[in-house]
Amino acid sequence: MLTLLPDTLTPAILVGAMLIAFCAGLVKGALGFALPMIMISGLGSLMPVDLALAGLILPTLVTNLSQALRQGWRAAWGSVVVYWRMLAALVVCLLVSAQLVPFVSERVLLALLGGPICAFALSQLAGKVLVLPVARRRRGQWLSGAVGGMYGGLSGVWGPPVMAYLIAVDTGKRDMVRILGVVFLIGAVAMVGGHAASGVLTVPSVRFSALLVMPALLGLAIGYRIQDRLDAARFRRWTLMMMVCLGLNLMRRAFGF
Image (cartoon, rainbow, N blue to C red; front, side, top):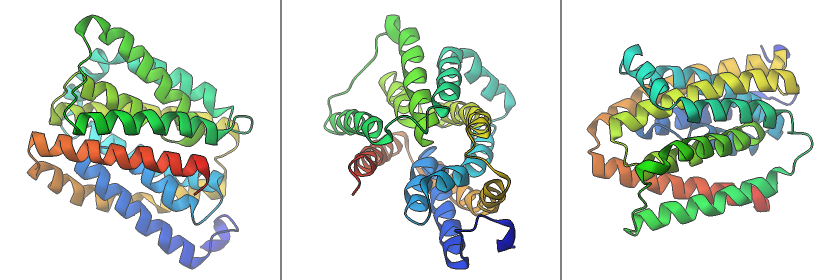
């Protein structure tokens, strides 16, 4: 089987990659996000970054499909109708930025994203609630989608700006998880197209990514059970704590720690 996969993969690395996919799926099932962050961080410590980015693509696509449709296709479509501006900006910017992978300094961009995300989440945990006025929410959708798409194409992580927007408009737990699933699903489809054109996705790397789907789905199923037991306040607190971790991890990657 290994002869059909990228040359850099050994049996030990493949097992490690599957464990990382399982853990990423578990966290995503519980909180609705963080799979790309965990996978790119974990896989990136075992293999070249371009292969790690390719590896997370199919697990991201399949788990987001499950998350988006967990409450039925009507609810998912309702999220598309409400958040079409965010989705449109996300797709366009992701497709454009994916082509810039060989030319743009990822470290600078990750630092510029990680710092504000940490500051936002920590301020929310400290009780300084940021509420986006209704009159500015359409503009907020365009902005969060554009920023998320730009970073998503370059690093495979486009969730933080979207989550910050949803928290700022006080989105409930069930709605937030569903909306994130829809946004992430459409972003994942765009990422597949973008990186098929950028050269990151090759036949061997797609095979590798496919092997990580089942571990990610197993973790997702267990995570769903955890999510169902969380009340709204605890879910919000855990989400913000994970956002702090996400921001710190982005800063770590930016400065090469």
